[in-house]
Length: 421
Image 1 (cartoon, rainbow, N blue to C red):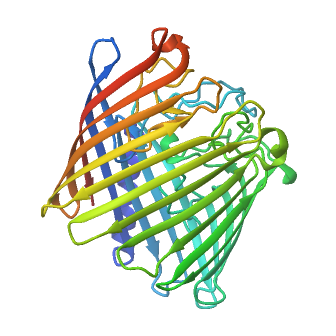
Image 2 (cartoon, rainbow, N blue to C red; image 1 turned 90 degrees about the vertical axis):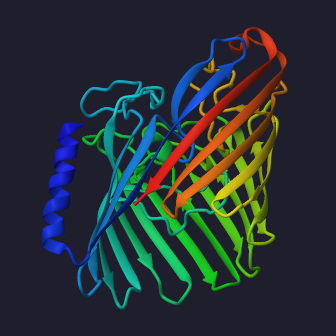
């Protein structure tokens, strides 16, 4: 870790001295502490960042440089959060068979989620990006998925031929995992990826200002992230499966957030292992103080014996100047709270606002959650959140990891802190 700190500081000092006029920095830090009560177990304390969904903490430092003509530049991010260790091991030139990340570890690691150069041509109508690329041009704005087809180590070409229209073509030899997995590159750097196994992406979107946004992305099946994670009941975090994703946003109504996203994953084996989800995100700011919202997600499976999952999150907030109370109520049919799943003993609960997992089993799983919270905005860049979340997980049969009962209650009283800079 010290080596990364020294390298990061040296890089920042050198580049600041050389390019002070065109180099900018930003980022944030998030962490918190929760008092966790799991069923009949003894209460314990857990360090967790609710805002960033990260065990322990998350720290990000973003940097961007471009020349005076704004025709070329470089972007990078240094990040530290949970461990980057893979649970599998691999010899040089091979890929671990198991790409499951050891998210329960609390070792301090730095990663480089992205570091790439870019060149602009023809008054910004053509952009070329190369390196560890992370571009958000086609990232969805919905509550649940909030992602795109994924990038990684490779190339991205973007075309902006007319105002509002964006087209992109990408090719990546090593994929980048999600932010929850520290955005690490999922494949050994010395592994060979043949052309037919490379991850290729296509993105297309159109924005009519103050009216609507419509967009979509597609990726091919690849080995850029190792083996595809089929039969998991969730979107493939290794981003090795073939996926199609589409989104519509309504921009015409002041104070209204309206986003609908849909995805189909595992297209390479869709008839037997396909997954579809539909995500709707709505919020309406009634006045300067009062906001109501509804997030809904539907999970549909092609696998036999898997039932559709339905998640509903109704919430409301009221701002008293810098103090903002909020109430969330979640009901999930065929789903569980994130660390009350059948496969886990809930020793490492994660209690962020999207802390749920579809089960898609015949055990009749449901979860009801109630989360009152209060956010205190110290200034535009700093806030605290005090909250309490209660999960009531139920199943149609006794669950061994719940103490051989059909119900498990989890309660977490927490304090969360975020500082942006």
